[in-house]
Image (tube, rainbow, N blue to C red; front, side, top):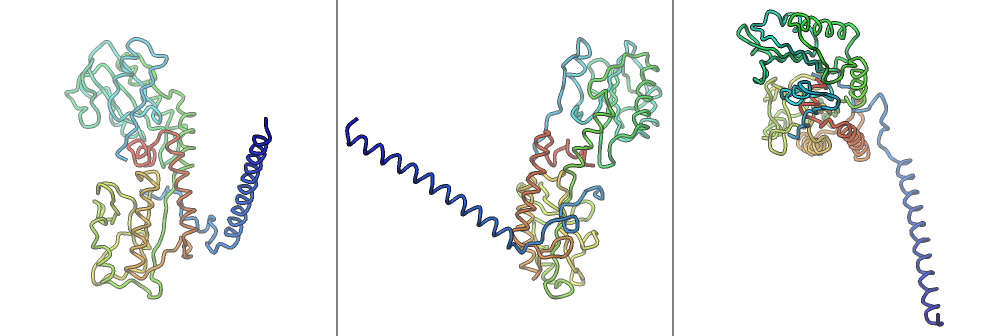
Length: 355
């Protein structure tokens, strides 16, 4: 290696070392800025008293997860039945019992539908051989069948299944088996108690509602004319329950409901006396949670501008951009946790659990 090559090598090493030192200094500066911003932030800290993400027990993506058909460990006719389940059965969150008989039965007497209707979250399907499965009102006096499916939702907003509910389910299943002299096997989740507990634990982790309020800056209520102007928006429409909802995208996706401060539907007219508007998102039942939140915030800012209002949390403390960003992060975590469990927010599967 000659002197020129050696000099170039040394210069290259010096440049690399300088770049490393420069990057390290910039990282330290950014850390100090973030720490200083966090210490000086005027946003209220999120705690139990003002957290806008509430438990959803008080509440009443067109993408759909395809129901899982787990055929592992099944043989012969069992595998055939498991592979041809009716639509709307989700083996991830439901226990499924199959009862088959060589004899064909007619009518609904043996099915004991009165007992069935007393069981929370239980559905019944019947069919003859390879016919289409029948359920609900289709099970009448003319129905013919030699195959029965009993499907139990393992958890909902009412909680996990109680010991008594599991006893009642097993009693109903075994009674059907005896009446048709059938063969019973469990397609999914035979260990009902354990699986119900697991699903309910997930539900408790993500079952939240986002509640934000817009109140007048100075007056005791909003001006009726401004209210009418704000609600004269094709994205805000009343649903079948006479509640205002915010739509976006293809006009079929809702991001939130708009309610009075008392949680009731809003009456918008020239005699309206509205002291505040509640924007409420039922998080696990909302499609595209973070996108819906962005649409919700766009409408809230428009609401504040048109009505001379201010955005506040549940403790009526003003919310700034820092606070809103932290709410977004919380929503993102909920969305990711649901997707990791293969439960798409707002899907039929989600609505089964969070109902």
